[in-house]
Structure formats: structure tokens, C-alpha cells
Image (cartoon, rainbow, N blue to C red; front, side, top):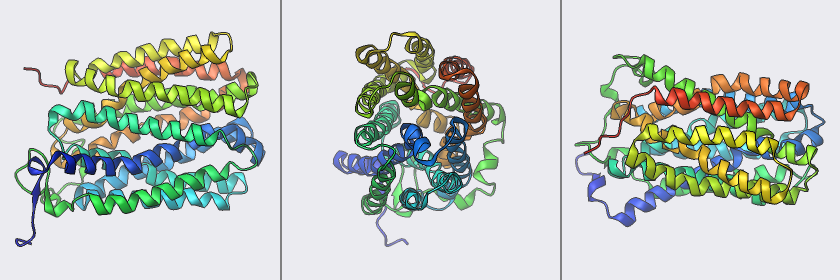
Length: 408
């Protein structure tokens, strides 16, 4: 081992470090693409498989349950074994799970496919955060988080743009496209990213040796007085997921079933919303670097108000596009969560700490089923309006958490 070259992040060229960041973002694009097929394709899956609203809403529950399991297990493997290799394997799992759509022909096979795919989707966030924050100085973390959120919404926008060409007769092809992309991205990760045992992250003095830590990373999140912070982070994430699922999860259904918009118009409206998110990602990243991580809670408050405006506006392409753009711009204020979560814990827990983002699915799993039941019993507007309340509550929890940005 002593004869092997070990690189320090500080010694790498900007081109080298940004190429590594770009390699991490490739699986992230298809993570977003594949994850959001659950809500974008919802009306077409329901029509194709003959499903009720509660049944099609449960796709998120099973996908989220898989993601929760993956978030609990996969980042711990990354922290103790190899963040690079585990991240590549996660991308392979997403690809294979997505391609499994070719075997789906019923509700039962659909929820199995969603669960399996969800396991690997749950490992993406923690692994990606633990890698990229080791390549750059801490003063860039908010900006990097904004770029990650931009990438995520870019993948979602790509889904909207490609998905507008498909309907109930051929929606499966959208997942095939995402699966092939994820498999390709995994190969690039292995080629571009340095091996963990030959790389020293930014600010560290030696290669991290996880075996020196006897407790499981998960257990350490509840040690040394961290329990309260850990639980509040999980609650905040749960409220965020519940809010997103309540509003975003039913948006295409509202536009299709209530307002009779064509698939092309729906795709364009959703693309505009994602463009808003892509724009907001960088702005909120800079705000988080300048004013602190908790300042971004303002985005949730504004998004809460915009949901109510969206649901009560006169249906028109221009109106929905403008409100949707503003909403997309605001709710991505949570993009800073990756570095923020990692900053709240020791460096050797980076992947596991960032994975708390997906723990919130414990709340959202029930929330998805509740949202479907409310939509079925009281209408989509009531179900989608729940998102407004959840975003506001999430903002309150966020403001109760410690600030990690150290100002001069």
C-alpha cells in the first residue's frame, strides 16, 4: 500500500475536481429521472393497469419504503467500505431495477418493481454528498448543494420533456430510458472517481479508516447528545416528502383529469416548474452560504403560500406556468440539506448523516396513502392543499435546528 500514490483533494487541479463532481452528477440525473416517474406517469399507469387513485398512490409508498431501507443500509456500507464503489453499485441497481419494468403487467408486479428500485434510489443522496463535499473546500458547500439540486431538477425536467411523448400505451419505455442511462453512469463513476484508499478528502490529514470506529455509523447518530438533532432532521425531511407528494404527486393528475390538458401541455407545464427549481437551486445555495443554512427555511414558507394560489387560480397555461415556476424556485431551498446534515456530524459519518434525508420517508409513507385516500374521498384540491401545511410545519422545525455556518 505504501507504494501506491495517494492524492489530496487540495492538490488536484480544478479541472480534475470538477470532472469528478460531474461524474457524481450523472447517476444523480437518472436518480431524479427514475424516481419521479412515479408521479409524472401516474395517470398513464392508472389507465394502463386499471388502478384506483389509492392504488396508484401506493406506488410512492412502496418506492419510498424501499428507499428508506436503502437509506438505512447503503450509506453505512459506503462509510465503512468504499463510497466510490458503493455509489457505482447503487447506480447499477437503479438501472437494473428500472429495466424490471418490462415484467410489470399488474398492480402486484408494479409495487414489487417500485420497492426493489426504491432500495437503490435510497442510497444515492448519502453516497453522493459524502463524495462531493470531500473534493472541495467548505466555503463552496452551499453552491455545490445548489448545483446538486439543479441537477436533480434537471433530471426531473428531462423526464417531463421526454415523458410528454408517451401515454398509457407505452409509458414503460420511459423507465427503460432511465435504466439504460443509470447503467451507463455507473461505468463513468468507476472510471473518473479516485479510489477511497488512494484519496484524502479536503481538510483531512490521511485516508479515512472507518474500521477504527467500532460502533455502527447509524448508532453514532444517536450518541453523544445527537439524538434530538437526528430526530428533528428526520421529522423535517418527512414533512418535506409529505408536502412534495401531496402537491407535486397529483399535479399531472389535476391538469389531466380536472382541466383536460393534453400530455404535451402537461409536459411543458411541468418542465417550466422544473426550470424554476433549477434556477432556484443556485440562488438558495448562495443564500445558504451567505446567511446560514436556516435562512433557506424562507423558501418553504413561500412555497406554502404558492400552493394555495395554484389551487385557486383560473386554469390557464400562462397562469399555471408562472405560479409553477415560482413554486419550483422556492421549494428547492432544501437543496442545502446535504452539506448541512454532514456539517452537524463528524466527518466519518458523512454518508450516513446525509442519508437522514431519506429517513423522512417514514412519515411520507403514511402520508402518501393518506393523500390518496383524501383525494379519493374529498377531491384533489383538498389533498394537494395538505402540501401547503406540511411545508410550513417543516419550516418551523428547520428553524429549531442549530446553525452550522461560521461567519467571520
